[in-house]
Length: 427
Image 1 (spheres, one colour):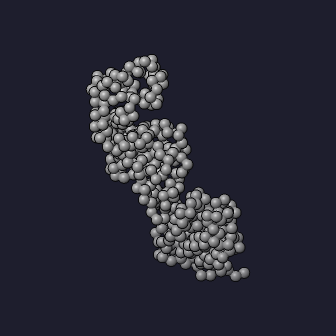
Image 2 (tube, rainbow, N blue to C red):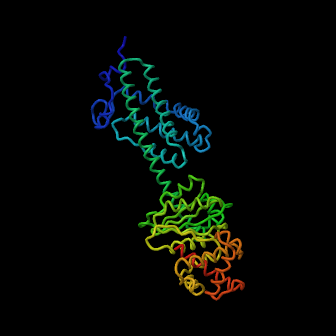
Image 3 (cartoon, rainbow, N blue to C red):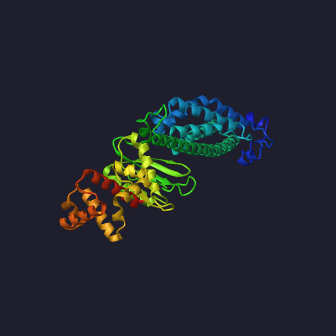
């Protein structure tokens, strides 16, 4: 009986080891080459089976992994191309284990799948499917020639396959995570640019005004407020995690961070207003202003100006929140705080000069009367006093200010002055 073909030109094969590849030695110990006949023949046979492998692996991946099954995100053609490129790269690495390995195919796949939104566990599972199919080919070749030397070759090749599996998984994962990080940065930059367009009221040619909120995930059928906060350091947010905290409560928002300010648009239902303000108060570590509620997106630039005005009404270095009241007067007074103080002094000067408790009583009575449409009875209920007490206080206020509460112009002066006082108190 003739000797086996592998004994005619070489000694019995020795198992290939990872250490030999790492120091650049081939199977026979010579640098940069692989001459072990069985390994060469095994590599050639596996290479000849690549068409079958490239047909088989995509079908197996699509059958076993839900993400790939429908072919909606990763098409069958895309999957087949990826399998083709990666399997050829694996076989080349198996054929020349001493050469420095090229992981570019794994990195390319990791980057592409990250962009496509493929979950990393599913991607790694697809890779394991490919390596398992490659191992099955090695085992098939071994079963065809069940000789001890051949088995040693298969085991050596299998060691290489599973080493490659680790290398490819690492390269794939690093490329995937790096791309995911890039995508997050890109997303934040894009969101920041869209928020800036909303604040400026000047969206780009590809994003008309009604599209910007939609792109930001903000509903159009809701109320909105703008929050503006100073940064605690250069580009250091003073409302850390506010977007996530709002989102956890089902309140969408979009934010922009600049070197000096953190600004956001918050969409909310009327019953959520107090909850939003409380979250902002809990988070604020610097001066923070909140605009009045508005509905139309075209009012966003004005709301930002009002939020900034509310912010600057707070003392410098004070970590607090100033919520600007609704109504046009609040905005008018907030836009020019110095003029508001001048009006308050001109109209209510004698009242403001009273001792603290007396001043507070008269101003509180006037505010209650205004809030209740000029009704002394309803104001009295709110203040827990008799209606005649309210009337007495109002007469005293008329005497001090020289403005009658029966004349529309005089009442308008008092309303503006009271708004200025309230705004100054909030600051």
